[in-house]
Length: 615
Image 1 (cartoon, rainbow, N blue to C red):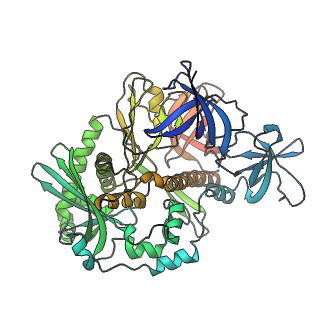
Image 2 (cartoon, rainbow, N blue to C red; image 1 turned 120 degrees about the vertical axis):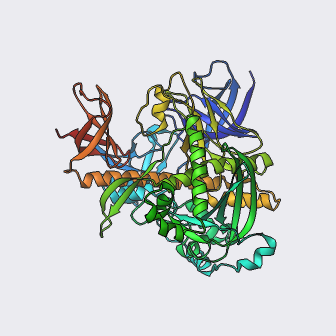
């Protein structure tokens, strides 16, 4: 039997076993390994394995290889965060994640003292001997049941909510916009093209411009992004710190930006009426909405106006003719473009939905805060028609841009929506790859095919296409329900991935334009930092949601029943929170019933909310 040795990253499946993701010349190969529950290997650890070839691999594995872990090469984490528990007069650390069991807390001279109920960060020693493993407290975050302690825990893996260094701030403040007209001879001059920007809560920076026109037999869309790379030298202090942040975290009490405000206002925002350096993408569509050609260029643009979401909604929805006259005058330089853009977006959406597309991103959770930064209100805000219009253009443009880079051999970052894992129940892969010369097509496990699509340099432009369809529509919060209930028929839907760096892919596109080499796989660390920031944002949203519920524990909420079973009733509050009502007997409820509930229990770590019926 042939045996090979290699290294990769370990991930544990829900079944308790795991696999090791090994990078190869053709991409990433997932090799199954057998591990016990209390082994000393944890999610994300880099391990050395021996690989043998066998026909007896697990049911859902699409390989004849089987791995055996030899040793841990590098731990995914050197510290863990969790709650202090007092059991039989002994203190234990119950980690929020990474290590799946409690760990005795070490005491002694020079070691930070902690108490029951504290949320702490601790170093772990003696990894290899599980029975001898100890947690050494290094930082007390606060009480486990408080917002502040869980907030600190959520952002512990990122530099967000800390200040930029003095050097980075000086670099930011010293960055001034160049005289764009001096670059016209080196770039494509688009100053005469009526480019407009778009302001909405989803696109706050206005660092994106658009130009749309009808061409013979179709459309031509121009998407223009501020050329940040021109002002930000690689490996400079500001570049390093921005890369560590990965992305901005805005849906929180204070917010934390990827770049200092002074830098953004100076060179990234198209709000000011002046000439800008940009990178432009032009995509041609036929009358059926198929992208037929994609071109890139470094450009100089001069935006003619900034369109607000509310005004654009009025323009594209029709409304009262007399009321539209002032808007048409205000947007005279861009009104036809906006209407044309809406027509194309409607065509693209109809085509996507006809092919089985499902929209999972129609609304966003909004928080309101009082003067003391406590959460006062929470609601679901449905995205405006104009925001959905822009998103639809981005979905299509993202794929067109990535295909251009892919087939040119330039390469770009693309990803699935989560870390590399297999769902044990459904066998559905959730893979992350870096684009190279090999096309990735993963055959599905239940008469379906999962295709990991290609990403772009735009926000929310990485999409994962997974074939699945439900015979009976199911109101759900994630594609998981569609996997479980989709038994016989499968079609495509899109699910937005994490936001990937404008900057990383912007540099890749500039390298393509200037015929220079750019190995995007070198950006792996930056992608990882973006994922950390994305996870932190989700965790903060979850924590703020639970905090709002706890602050309003006496309040009665209106809700809709999603699913009823003997184990409990799944409900969706009108403010967008999902939760469960546990029952001891048959509920008598069915999906769609309107009910009133009150919070019974909320968990900051898991985001789990348990409610009780009030009537």
